[in-house]
Length: 385
Image (cartoon, rainbow, N blue to C red; front, side, top):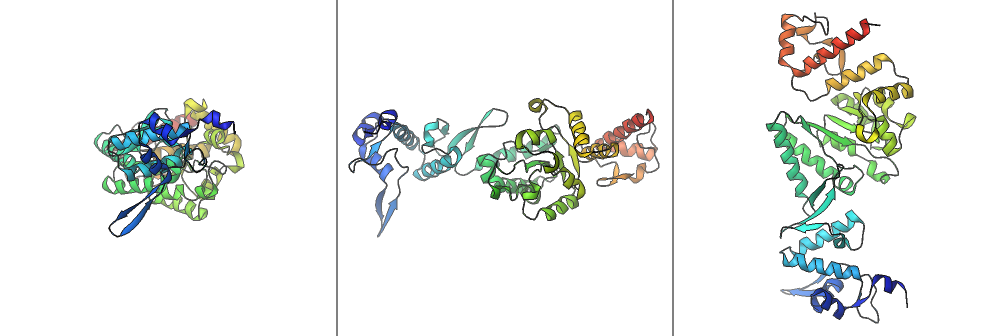
């Protein structure tokens, strides 16, 4: 006899019925499927899952995981979950967890109508996701837009989850359409999105096709994080020109991209973004995880790409140009740092005593005040050399 029988357990239908409290006829229907008549038509309901063992002498044989699965299905049906919801939830759970018996993972709850699965966010905190209709994400996104609209402490929204995770890869387009739809209802809420923090080997090649484009064209992203897989996207040069034309800023995370994706140096698209005139600014991604600060990223950029002071100055200005502070920019044209707005055109940038017109403009814009302060610091630093 196969020794695996002893490691996995083997139960006949009558044993399973006794141990689970579910009738033998119901267990057979769940694992064999069945036919039923409605009016003049005969329909077939396929098995809910395939048992751990093949039939023995034409009789169903079950393993221990099958017993757990039976108890789960029975409990959720008694709680009021419909058969259709249960079947769809099990199919999607198999895809998420990549196991044959997903209901054995002890990660599901129900309110009697829907099935929720517990997933862990990047923060380590558990969250519940409605697994069939996918409405939970939409509801959470609405809440975020409402919160950002009502409370000025929240400057914008972003989605948090590993971009190569199952939900992210499967539902990315759907989620971008959710964000884009809500952007139409809440046009003043700023949007920053993870896009392109994936690379060959981390996801299949077909999965590299379009996250950046979807974030910008459907998700209305004003800035994106990472953008590492840009050259694997469909029509990448066209997309680079689009990012430049729309003034979508790309957050460059050199250390994080090297540590997580293994992409660095000449393989990183940072020089390509600059070549096409896409706004870029350096970011740490996660100081606590990488044990770095922003100065570290500037030093790395200088050493890796031979950047000069004017290049770093451009990056810092770009960062403030694309922050989500309220008010108009100090600069007359987006991402053009040669000429300020008309009210301040005759002033020394960062001067202690701006003109009446410039002072009035600065008072009206928190963003412009921060940009003015940056120019003051630039002037002080350069004067000390």
